[in-house]
Image (cartoon, rainbow, N blue to C red):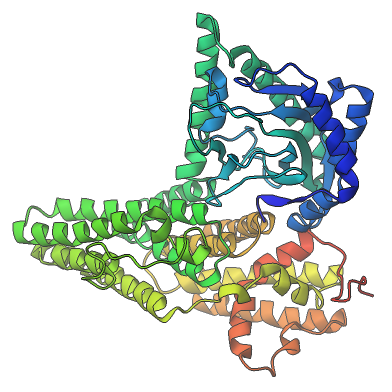
Length: 570
């Protein structure tokens, strides 16, 4: 759903012309950016700006991506903006990976920056890192993105030093987005962003064409800060950091379990990304890279502790070296399912080791693990770890070779529309929220009932489910689902260890209570709508996995249900 791209209505053609005429009347230096606040525009241009900011097409696209939320125009941040590719002083910040705002840590609150193009230039593109694609916008087109979270940069095709004949002219329009239950703080959130934007703009203008030592210093501050801030989100991410800290905390005093819990996350990420095709490509590449590095680092550290075995080391280096060479041949985008996500075109790679060794990346890893296993001390201490890695890579290979995935058949919003038809009554949804939590607690109890370190095993299961939610559902729903799972995990961790009888009891009680809730509130069960159809069991498994996100979407981001005809449901 991000970035949101479209065109304003044809009725706004006159407003576009008004804004273009205003900019053309200015005496602009094509080597510098230019901006003017909406409030500083003459009356006619201010009215045209307001009309474009109120475009129904823009508002509809935002509400489609943020269901159950309110949209508030943040006029204090709106401006006319003319870009350039001179890259002097702080202008250079726009050419590197950056995030515009600092409030990414505030959950459920979103500030969208919408670029409404007054005059396009097909040589200028805005590239979004997480989506691994760019937008070259034409006149009358718009593109909105998260001001505080989306890493992006501007690029120009052709000669990098050549000044553009016609700079791209756009309006920067801003919208504060919040769920209805957070509407009271929406204005405060908008004010924080507006204040920051004003201060940042003042610093930017003071340093965009530096002549003095102070100006050059300010330009360096802007460039360095806009470079450093996105690094954490681009290479680590909040959820990943929380998972790593969780694993480290619960595995304290359990050194063996700590190794295992850090070793297998990335395989599940491969499975979720390949199966559902719903995660942003850049986010998947970041997560998989991080957890694979953690897993291999953990593996090599334990291998190094067992002493030097030259034959083992040689085979391991050859195997992992083959895998690394395959990675270089494919490139990062293609390695992380770029062709499957549509990031890169589907094509056959022929350079060695491709064309000679089938699936050389996975085969190289298997050879590398075999090399590690040649070390007798390491094999004796960690053979289950090696078997686990090999088994997971074989499963990944089988999934890719058999092409087992849902493709275009999975859409969370379509599943939700089916689900909510049977969960319209507030009381039924509330009962489901409580009983689903009890059932999830029971599942966690069963996971921990038969292992020596239950907290470690349950934390791993909770983290994997959190990633499942993040990879299969929209951002707001995923965040609420992760928080919901985190609350249940916290309850499990503070309770005495649950035995299997209590865990089974919680799971049974939750299931029966949900059935009774449907009877009490006179709503059919979701399963009854498809239980006689072909593939009902597969649907049941998928919908059971999605139960927490579906309930969180129904409870915290409700919207009026519409039937396929477009008429509101009765």
